[in-house]
Length: 118
Image 1 (cartoon, one colour):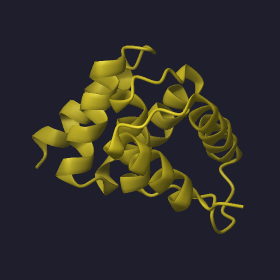
Image 2 (cartoon, rainbow, N blue to C red; image 1 turned 90 degrees about the vertical axis):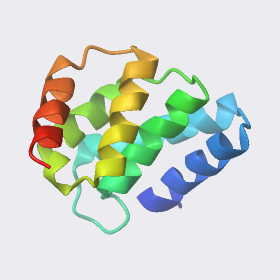
Image 3 (cartoon, helix red, strand yellow; image 1 turned 30 degrees about the horizontal axis):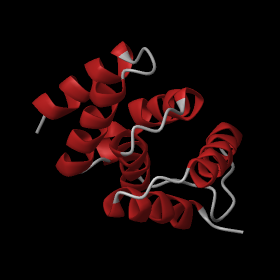
Image 4 (cartoon, one colour; image 1 turned 120 degrees about the vertical axis):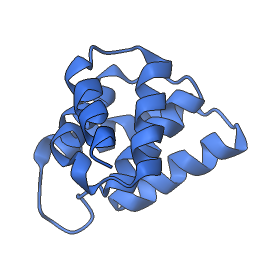
């Protein structure tokens, strides 16, 4: 069983290589959504700020639609943006702006606020 970082790394590797795999990305989306919804403190279930940014970046790069996952990551990211490095903020903003799959005005407002503080 992959931990959360390994799930993210797998998605990132495929996106970086430009390799689309709908079956793989559907499985990653389902598992990541389950983990985000569980909010379990168990090892392997916590996504880092880098993991959240890389996950949405990977899906947006390959134009793979995963609205449920994007909503869950938006909720998680909004409450944790102070943990994000500048690059992670920009990757997250780009991914959501590029996908336009879900309504994330709260996330965009939080991204703007966090960016202005830096």
